[in-house]
Image (cartoon, rainbow, N blue to C red; front, side, top):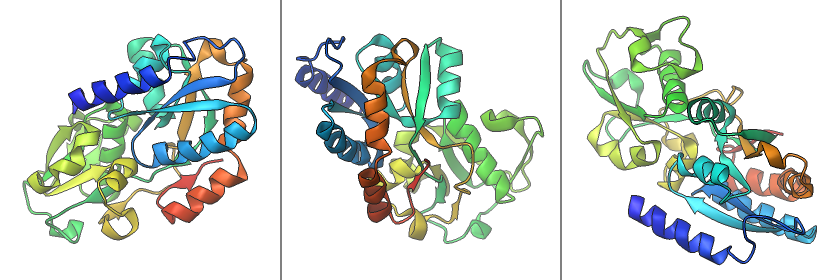
Length: 264
């Protein structure tokens, strides 16, 4: 997958090179997204923005780490793929000077299985895959706790890890994997907590295929992030206005039937 990412990223940057990293007229930007709904929505945003004179090149990534690295390095002007807790963790851990400028959509995380029809069927010692990044991993553990499968330390917060599990009556084995890889690993585990964008990209339908799903009204609204130094650039307002347009809202509500929810 890493080779595919490198090739795709290099090709996209090559196609966008006529803009350069700076914008003399602020009329052309590069926006990073992950595959699936984030990419699909941004293509609609691109069409709306073009009507207002802003040209967007959409660059698709296959993991959660590279879009922030590319943004911080100046290879992107914005990205749209992460929630605020994830950005906060990246800023703290990597020193990125990145900020949120707008909310976008919410993807309620679900638990999926190829072996079970209900979480009540989980046997002692069952293997459950969760994302291996701190914020989505904690999100998955909180979802498992909500389902009564385990209990976390009271002060674990949104970044809970398997080390914070204080009660695990079924002795579940938590398997930490890259979030993008978890759908491909469903056959190797008993159940898996999967981010909705990756679930949908793998052909899973949250409303019908998930055996448990997160409350959508939580702290995990996705965002548009930019470099802090760019917060007053004219294109920022144009990008946000295009994303928050009636056309984009209508597209999201019509295409995803509640699996993806607008957060503005």
